[in-house]
Length: 535
Image 1: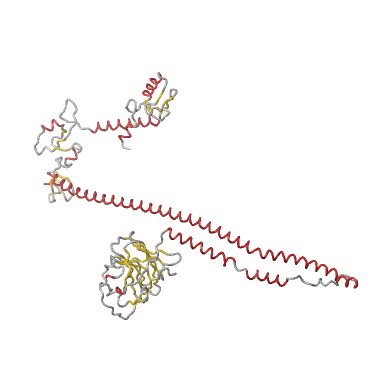
Image 2: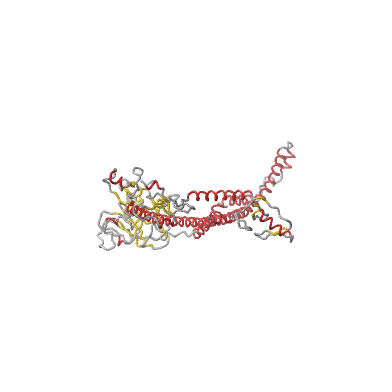
């Protein structure tokens, strides 16, 4: 809030002056105690009291609460205003010629050592020795401290103001000296130029700050959007996993219940037959314990004592069939269901987050150097010593062992994978079609129109433009590389295809031409991995 606005908050809305003994009504509005009591006295005649500010009504005369905090603020403000008034009065300089009444001076004469008002300034001498100055400049600072003469010159070598005696007889006789006005104008000109540069620099900084703030807001907005999407994806994954889990558990339960019926029936039959056998065994044991031969022979002369149960062989076959032919429930029923369910969930997630499909990349033989041999599939390039003597087409790399892709990308997000395990010296990356293929500075990454990841001397580096290569930390024994392009965002990223995937570097810029994949072969072979190839 501006100072003037804050000052208005200290005025009583009744008397329109600064508060005196401020009090507060129940509705929260403040008034001078005397002002509000006078208003309430008038309201008492009608029997209805109300706030002059918000018109809230009170059935009985409202109690007035002293506002100590507001009173302290008012007193502090009054004290400060009085001090400023006194300081202003003390700082005023009055005309020395006006002897009857004080009149504020507007200029000082250094020669007369007098302060002059407008009237006396008009009749004052205009001769050169009467030098006029602003009242803000102390008189003693306008004169030489040695010769007590007016300072009229400026020594540029010592950065000192001089009087006439200092210039003629002092230490500045041989120095470069200028009139104060001339030196002042030059200094003002220099300061004005410096000021313009500083203002321009400040404006540039303000623009940079605005751009950074805009970028920061964009990053935060993007992060918020991604957070919402990821949260929704995980929520949906958990929901689908819960459904899949219930489905599989129900399947296990049903299969187990179904598989338990035959064994249960067979167990019941075998239990009955086992009980019959147990009774026969006990009867035979009792007979065998008899000592009287006649009784033994009579009791044991039953042909069914030693007979086995009918269907023993059939029961054994049923048991063997159940034990050996039931199969693995997990392998035959559950794993296929689990695999299909998880695959469907992952497929749905990939569609939901719009993961780009791998780009189909083939190498353009019309750009390949004569020592770069391409296999028939146009996905594998090898460095050879034999010169292939291809026709000298306009787009061929004539000096460096490089090759570009047939495909180009001028929008969207794309990625492809490269197997570099067959070479110990290589570069993989991207370039504009305008790269000058007949020059040494067409070296991939060593110019403003190409970007690359390089392995050289058992070290990983990234290159772009005419800058020195930037080494990357970590193991240089990379066998598979993923190259990702986001054309609109102006980003080229490199990843090592390990588990988990490792980000190596991201270039950021502005792409003004279509982008081609490009390879440099120091030796050995490099292969573009086929679409959806398992790495």
